[in-house]
Image (cartoon, rainbow, N blue to C red; front, side, top):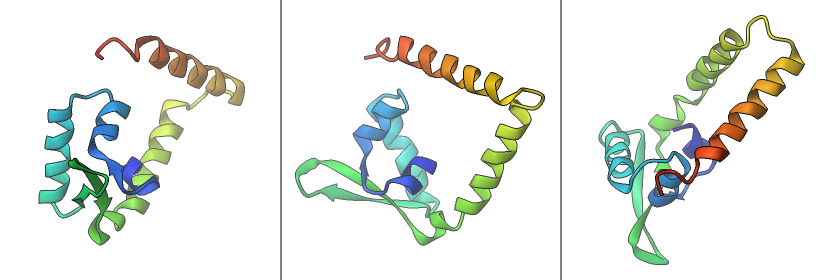
Length: 105
């Protein structure tokens, strides 16, 4: 949801790739967002087999709440770490993600 709030109109396939999930899982997640009224899909005008995902007004209403949760999570997880330690940890996690990025493709 946060990804969609940052950049609307993302192809469902691109969301699957970004979050390392298969297309069927991405389709189910998108359908769940649709059924709860948080998002809707539109057929991609350039590729009739693809769909782009957009956030509804109801979905946008969650943005502030999600940001507060993300900030609380970040504050809790990095509690007691210096700024440098936090930066190192983030760099390590990003490197680990890169290391495994091709495993399931």
